[in-house]
Length: 444
Ligand SMILES: NC(=O)c1ccc[n+]([C@@H]2O[C@H](COP(=O)([O-])OP(=O)(O)OC[C@H]3O[C@@H](n4cnc5c(N)ncnc54)[C@H](O)[C@@H]3O)[C@@H](O)[C@H]2O)c1
Image (tube, rainbow, N blue to C red):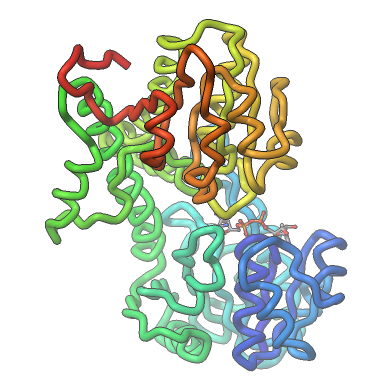
């Protein structure tokens, strides 16, 4: 079984490397010459833990090209992992997937044997068995279900653990045009997974719905915890962490993604509720929960801004710790740390910021001027108020002397409850999800 992977980005490169590491001969294709050159030089084209190690053990079985038809022609199955950006209505655009399918179909045309096409990119429900199937049939001049199979099979992975998540999935979702296509794909996964995942096979539209439903459900849990946090912060003696730990112990609820903190960000989560709601509107259905989840998420930065404004007037020197949307990644897309920096600068504050990995990315995309600090310690030392926006573990280890001030104590707004007892001894730590103890309740 020879595999081609179209699109060697954050998801496609790890997917190609996982298959190659498991003994498949893999040809990756990408529109970017730099990405192709990197893979052919044996270097990971994206920064993802474990990816380089997989490429290292795959030597001789992993190559790349920018000629998609040629890559498809020499393989038996093709995974399409190109971007599906949100359009102005909030839905995911199939533009790049269709362009990829045109090239894939061209490659299939030159073959005589059966070919399987798997769409891995996140697409709107109805796409695969609709315009994607049409594009493939047109370009390949074959009928789906006869000599060409079409599957929709998204990955449930998180940036920073993509390789591990691909090797050890809990569930495999296979949307299939016909049993032969699904069987073949299940066989590929059986060889590439180290875990024994639950396999769910279904038609393509149910798989597309299941993918978007997982993300909208998980984000609903996050927004629920944040809604609870807002309430707890206004009730004397309340602590969101105590409450979420208690309710998370109930197996009907579960503790994962149930933490009052900052809102969710990154390239996937924020756009899924928006797309879900856009689809519902188009079909005349209601998606109140998806809309509320998104609105609650956007409100989380307001809570932090209000907490800063209540305690410090501009220009101040607000130290923001954490710009990536989560720890262990340099990705700043839709990160609440970045939104906070922008909102504070626009209100006239001087902002100093530090992130262990995302400083370069933050500088590249920021629309406002802020000072980038060389270390977490220097950021805390120079600030008149500090906000912890991303729970990088090293933020709990900042030298305590950096928090000490003569005269007025430093205020630290700790969105993730990572402050330590020694920090509490020298600074005023504000936990947004905890109501004041024995005094007037907080108003922000
Ligand atoms: N990154 C994630 O964690 C993640 C998780 C789940 C789903 N997804 C979905 O996977 C898809 C890909 O996401 P990503 O994060 O890997 O994107 P990415 O932007 O990191 O990578 C996409 C790659 O595709 C290449 N490309 C674009 N058009 C092409 C074409 N016609 N032919 C060949 N190459 C082409 C680009 O040059 C780029 O290298 C999206 O639909 C995304 O929603 C991503």
